[in-house]
Amino acid sequence: MGLADDAENYDLAAEADELRKALQREQQKLSRARAKTGELLEAVYQAAESAALAVGRTKIAAPVRDRRKPRGETALLHLTDWQGGKATPSYGLDVMDERVDRFMRKALKITEIQRAHHPVRDAVLLFGGDLLEGVSIFPGQAWQVDSTLFTQIFRVASKVEDVVRFALAHFEHVHVVFEPGNHGRIGGKHDGIPHGDNFDRIIGEVVRRNVSAEKRVSWEMRDHWFQQVKVGNYRAMLIHGDEVRGFGGNTPSYALVRKGNAWASGAAKFEFRDIYCGHYHQTMQLTLANGGQLYMTGSTESDNAYAAEFVAATSIPSQRLHFIDAEAGRVTAQYVIWLD
Image: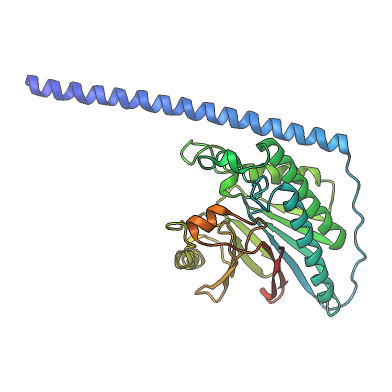
């Protein structure tokens, strides 16, 4: 073995040593990030539990049972992209509160019209993510919010709990499905923080604990990239929407259908008919190859200057209400409820 071989072996060993050191540094950074995240989660949960004890929780009276023979339908409400804490000329936390309340009142009024013909005993609430705005999702965001992250978490959690309790007062059983969004992400995409550590998910867990004494509510919040929606024989996928990337700010209609078809063909390992998504603050309906639909739901916010300038798109504040035939496994009626 010559000097050249020795030099080459030395370079390889030195490179391997540098790689080991770099890996150790990244592992230490990841460990610190996870430790900080764990401390944050525990602080939020303890604060929420203390607040709940201080305020107290009254038991919700169940509605009168509908004893008619027809099997009836299930109300499905898709609530997404509240962006709680976002500040625009016509939007903030108080406006979010008012618009969410308006949606629930309108959804109940439409439900009562349905009930005049057949029972609608149960409700499914799909919370689709980006319920809060966050403070560090993009540069300069701090100048576009009306409250701290702490305030956002508790104001939004309070409104989610209001929605769940309102539904419990008007439906015999309420099933909640909770999917986090990109604005709830803790840290940057490449900070090594697990997908499940998300402020939207924290809000969901806070509310789940606060209503845990109510036996008529059930909860679905998997640490996964999508949530399963099951209503009798009806199957749907709940995503936030950022699983499909847009180009130049455009709503990626073709990409959504292409991915939706791939998921329905077995890639998601879950057999479903429809997909519910938000994220793009637009209302849209696209047909999948399996005959199902991709339902895109809008946002409660308004006057988004970024969307108007960069995406050249604005939308009227809205959320979505469907009625499901659980036995037939399909949507029987659909409503986009405008909130402006």
